[in-house]
Length: 316
Image (cartoon, rainbow, N blue to C red; front, side, top):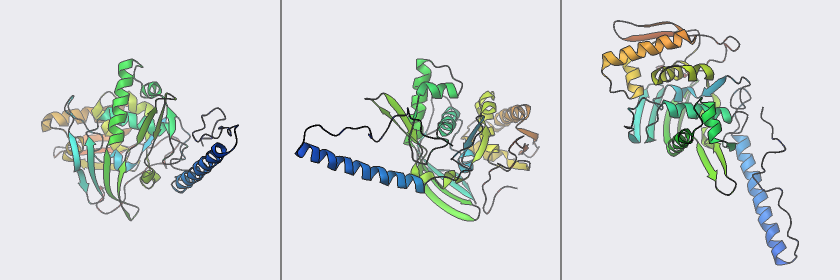
């Protein structure tokens, strides 16, 4: 659990001193301070109400894990656009299933954006939903195993811009309950005066983050292709230890791929083999009728931490 360090910056100005001169200036200062304190209490109350349970974003103790809501993991959010050919979506439905429908507004996101998003969520573990945390762009580049050059930092900044400017329109079932929401994936801000960068999750995403799919982050970053990382994020949204079967066409849809089917099948088979070699799945195959099958392996220490989308029409 994250605790506040005594050396952390005070974002609310508690160290502000009372003006030495008296009269109207001191009265105005006291009134302003009272208003700031009231706003602080209000924001704390909002954050407290939105806090996730100790098993979820309050967060996890293992440093090797990342996490993401299963709806986002399998919901065509992070795709495989061709280099330099990102689309712009305006409330466009990118996936529709009986238990999950997602619309998207914003610039198309790719697997690099997905890696940055996972790193941001890792940086926020132990925090309240909506609470901002100071980060370093170079630190994010290091977290996703990228060289910390000026170009890499700019690439991370561009990813944060895309992630913070999009809106996800969600309609999904979970444990028999129906939810609808329009949320931003995250927010970020750079304060010129202090030269500090902060990130946060959308406060309205508390329900979405109440259930998470767990990802071995080191294995994820070590996978050889964008296709393999996309597939890793997808398979972790299913229950561990159970064999799954999904049509090849679904993977073509959620990736936004325009690659010919036979070429896509070959790339997907290579990605399945990479996940099997990494010890993430086994029993993988693509059948003659293009059914993609695999079994997601248990964690050695945490086999019970599987997340799944529940509701009518889930895959079996």
